[in-house]
Image (cartoon, rainbow, N blue to C red; front, side, top):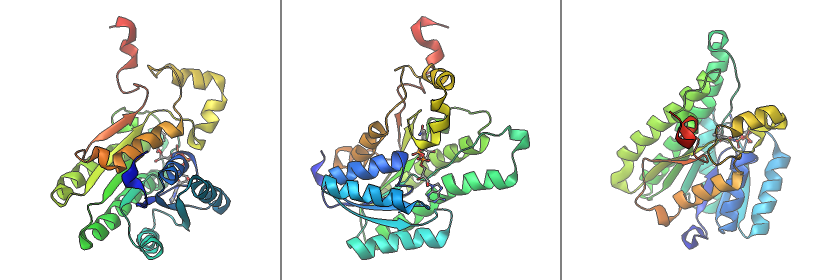
Length: 261
Ligand code: NAI
């Protein structure tokens, strides 16, 4: 538990499923006031709201598409109206789909970049605007991926979006550090969420992914949420512009394990 997170106002985009849901609930356990943004599944979002409240936090749900500027502007405004302020912005919403790069349509490229990178930019920009105008030493956490550093054939749009997030986070961290505003990334490896459901249902594909993880197992959403609450808390008060990998060692060249090479 991080006592300074009590009553903090935390926005989580894509907060109705997977990592967003796990983070929203963990912030609820920290007794934070959580704003759960969701894209379309209101029932899912309401279930998350209920769990947050059961855990002792307060929660509201707000429908919105992170690729739409007006939705992101209104997300921050509504959060401030309902809870009086915002201290933590978590840009988590994201999508992926595999396509050979020479067959990738511009529409598909744009959709992934718009959601994963532009969505995170809009969320960061609006949070920064609010922090600067109100002199708040706020905190931004962007959901990156091990693919901010690991190339990923068939997922060029996804890898480009996460590489972009790395650069964006580092730049914003540098730009706003003098104001005490921190900007960091959480970069998960392979985690058991709906984005991977199909892949992990197939034992062969699951085993193949596990073979890329030095710790030998697919991560749990709660392990990613644990990293996010630490980054949001004052325990990480001197940390900015960094990526915290939560990947069971996936970025540490697993093919070199056991003295190979
Ligand atoms: P998920 O599919 O459960 O969650 C993605 C969420 O984003 C969903 O709730 C979806 O409705 C929302 N979303 C999609 N487009 C949106 C839009 N335009 N506006 C608002 N919300 C939108 O999958 P997961 O795993 O929880 O993904 C969350 C983030 O974590 C993503 O950014 C993903 O790239 C990242 N990530 C996930 C990993 C994993 O292994 N699960 C590994 C590395 C990164």
